[in-house]
Image (cartoon, rainbow over all chains, first blue to last red; front, side):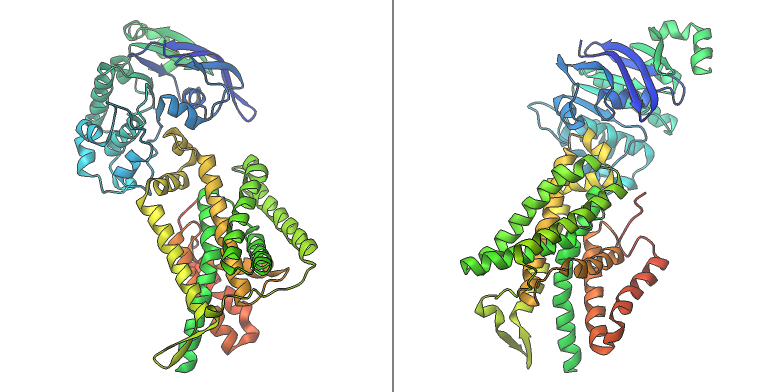
Length: 231
Length: 286
């Protein structure tokens, strides 16, 4: 097991957002988190990576307790994030966006390998981050996370606002990364996409996990889909 | 003609001093979003420390280095123990830097007895250089050279190095910067130290150029504010252009209609802000 969350409770000021969440994930798999807006999916990602540390409970990553660790320390340990809305650094060009967090590892990700993976980024390498299309920005956000040479990537709604073509590309990227042994936590609003790409899914509602199953079981359960996802 | 050339030269050299002061202030704002009232205090620390080191050791250069490094260390202590806990709370940080300024001022009055000093630069700095029939004071030429060198160095580091990219990423988005492994607290501390270093440098040069006295902090602070706000908060280029504008306005206004000095300083700021609220090269922050 690469990561284990054990009964984590997270607050934003006085708002009680995550109300006891536990799960774990095996290396080389894609774990999906589904749920409506505002149920705590993004907060969960931010809790795992240490941006909004849980007030109770504990996260174990690669057999290390992350309690009290700063985000940059967690990242250096091998967790990366593709944030919601992509959040490309606008004052940095494409190359700088990629290299700013580069942690070289023997045989790991570097500029050349990222360009091979996303040829479009190589073509636009001198453009500023905010001069790219949404799809290109998403490729850049994924490339930027890969440059830290992570063992686990948290992807927060990577298909949000993308054209169908780019949604498909993101799906292919996830599959290719998985084949290379990467572990991915995928937060999604797009049910089809999550069912297609995840190996296992959890549904969050009001800060707790209310459903866990294989994608096919969830797909065959109209009641659950209707109640928690509104589809 | 003589009047214009001499005054322009004075204006540019004064702009050099203002840039050293405003450059650090604008970087601190960009990275930490702190409006650093203590910047005038750093100027004061620089001026007095420089004077005391140079007059006891008899070495002007040691005075400069000692003042800048010492002030950077003081800045580090303030950042670590007084400002870090208030990260993200703009008003509280601003009040804290206000408190730091008063603290610095009082400590300096206690140590120095409240006297004003003028730092003696080495003989060669007091020379005049003749260029095309005009005489230029070497110390003023040095002020310009120092500011240009600092600008080029900062520009190079910010735009062409990985450290610079890390700083710009932190300015763009602190949270996301952390998720690519950047230690933003370390970046903030480094920038605060750099700002203190540059303000102290300005203080030493200023004390050689005119004098250093308690209360100078609140004399230079409004100038630094105008420089930074005119140019756009967070922009190094803005600070350079702002320093030139303020340098020229202040010099010519004092020479032509001295009774309106403060008005002529703040009026262009009001005009520019009403046309472009972010300043000349600034961006939206909130």
